[in-house]
Image 1 (tube, chains in turn red, brown):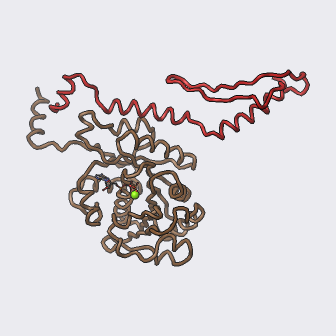
Image 2 (cartoon, rainbow over the protein chains, first blue to last red):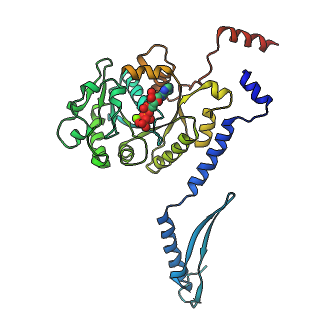
Image 3 (cartoon, helix red, strand yellow):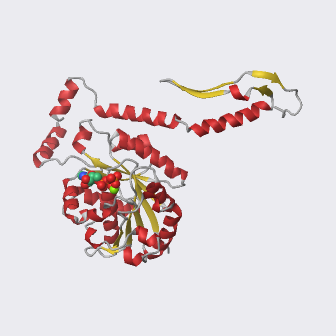
Length: 93
Length: 266
Ligand SMILES: Nc1ncnc2c1ncn2[C@@H]1O[C@H](COP(=O)(O)OP(=O)(O)OP(=O)(O)O)[C@@H](O)[C@H]1O
Ligand SMILES: [Mg+2]
């Protein structure tokens, strides 16, 4: 064993490459969760279209967002319902 | 049969794309292939000096695409290595002068003349990158064992997959001593994170700087470990995909080797 390595082991210091690897894995994960702004916009448009088949909703007050915390990410979609459509035209479940 | 077009790319700058393009070009030519190495960094050419051909530039890639000259007139023949040609970038034009469709046209012509065309991609994911991957059949992604370089490599790999190209990885500038002491990501770490196939490992080598200083091909430098690694990568790229990849290791002195032999017996 090299002297430096020995010294490090004795002083109970971790390898800096382990820190590098951990940071790298985390960065790659969050990079992939990052979503283009127009992706969210398109998703919102599609969601409005689908939901409007079932409910009358206020298209202006819809909010769609991604909430990120250190542990998890969530897609948050919030819309007030004005009225429910009659059963007519709703595809079978 | 038509030749193939291989892009050398990385995302992050300064990780060794140009050095590797020049050396792989030289090695493939020495193995008997007809090779063109193309500098895709419009406005910031470098491959010409690394290959030691900067004094012989007359026309460049933009001239070919604008129809000002024939490919034959722009391609510079290396006089030291048979069948090795450089197509230099333009130094004065704008990055956006060339479009992906121009590169597809050009590489289709190059495929008829050359067995292998290597595209030395600029850093980043802008026009030069887009032009390069639009024209490529295969890709080599270069990274160093650093967080930023590996992260950028991951992004590039994603973009290549989107173009239906499955890239191979080169880890460059490995310092075996630091890997052993735990202060540098090992190639195993990098491969685990990126989960793609490796095509070569190149260690940090002073000979690279010497070769670049003088503009002589690295693979002609005697006892350059990086040069030897490049030659083996060239073999893997061309018909010998299963040639084993050697792990760069600390050069142990005779006495240390002897010592470890004895200690192993105990
Ligand atoms: N294995 C190596 N050992 C030592 N030095 C190296 C090695 N590989 C590359 N270098 C040096 O690193 C520097 C950057 O290399 P190079 O120009 O090939 O990178 P690049 O990826 O083409 O950069 P750019 O993104 O700017 O085009 C150069 O000075 C080169 O000599
Ligand atoms: Mg370069």
